[in-house]
Image (cartoon, rainbow, N blue to C red):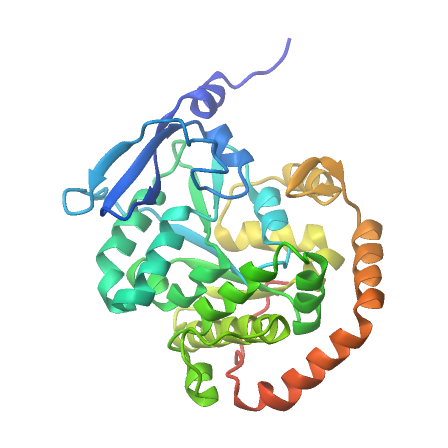
Amino acid sequence: MLNVNIGAMNEINTPRNFLCTINAEGEYLFYSLKASEIEQANFLDIHNLKLEAVLPERIPVRDFVPPAQAWPLRYIFHTAFCGSTLLSRALNQTPRDLVLKEPDVLMKISSQSLLVGNENISPFLLASLKELSRPWAPSGSVIIKPSNSVNRLILEILGHYPGRAILLYSSLEEFLVSCFKKLPHAEQKIRWMAQHLIHHTELQKKLNVGSNHPFGFIESCVIAWYSQMEYFAKAIERDTNDQIRMLEMKDMLAKPFEAVHAASQFFGLDRTLTELEASVSREFSRNSKNLDKAYTDTDRSLEANRVKIEYSSVLAEALKWAEANIAPVAIMPGQCKSLI
């Protein structure tokens, strides 16, 4: 006879109102979603959740009362193109441990902060984090993986709703290779990413450029990476309670079980070694954005090498330009414990 956990199945299949986004009219939009739908989506926005034809519950932000209880929160902040979705899927165990991958409401708040200032979005940020932190199962946990553009709010997030945080990143060269790999469709997105992330940074002041400076594509890649390093550096500097760990993508890919096991322990997840081994075996052998497609270490290496060969001269020039023009004025993370 199959040993079926009926309670867990009900928690997976029973919908509940989920805070998806905030609109231009100042309303929170809630949609009825199952935990399994949250698990499957790579981005928690209306488009990726296929909610365009669904009517949401609209609550004006001034009328919204977030939960009184504050549940523990765990965060995965990342530099984009560094395996954050892969780590999220390996840690996810619906509905007990649910990873919220790139909630749109946080992205919208980050965009609004560009107009009104970080200090003026604090009430919306705290209310959203309190609502998102609500577990989906008794004694369950929530891990939030914000979009990388939300890194510019990392101090506000950890200040208003502290929690353990993993800072996942790739080297500048790996970041460049990933950006090149996504050409041509990602070019405009990366240009926008750089403008978003450099806003009000020390790097922006030192380079003496405006917030809407039209960076070229290569400049955008480099600016985006170094801006995120500055946010990580400031978060580490303020971490007086030993709540932050850094994890480099190459280390995670070289030692996937060790990385996922360490992340599980750091976040206080209740996982057996057998569960972790099964999760790592499953997730690290397929494409995290296209789950029906196999994607092994060999596939990753071959793809990266192909891009490096194709863009070898551009890559060399980009690294040279970054070393000469950005590295001397950039703020880089100081001493921080590595996850593994």
